Amino acid sequence: MKFSLLLWALGLKLKSAAKKSGSFRTRLAEQDMTVQIKTADGARGRYYTLKGGAIRSTNGIATAADVSLVWSDAGTGFSIMKSEDQEVKMKALTEGKLKLEGDAMKALWFTETIKQMKAV
Image 1 (tube, rainbow, N blue to C red):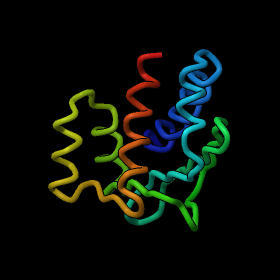
Image 2: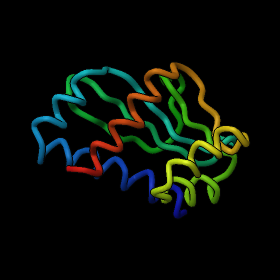
Image 3: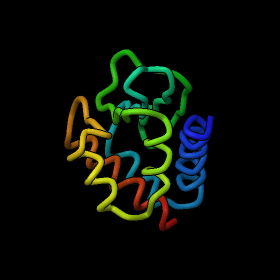
Image 4: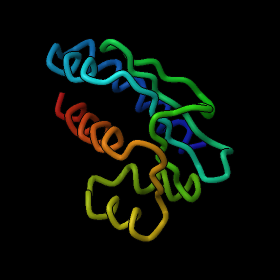
């Protein structure tokens, strides 16, 4: 439940940052893509569609996402996503708690966008 709520809140924060900041809207307009964050078992997930600077957040699993961030389980995803420590997130990748599927460059762009969102 906490993981799903965190993913929902991420969508709200992205939309809010886009409304508040023209430079953030410009950043969102750089990419048209679908990003999903989900658990490995597919039980929990949400996807974010970015198109023309707008963002749409939808509960569930996208069938054809450009990039997927797949967490080993909801508890692990929640605790690591809440962490401000980048090393914890990188360690999750190396330990297999987080897997990237799809376009790694788009995943990096999305990660940097989240960092920029937090600064708005």
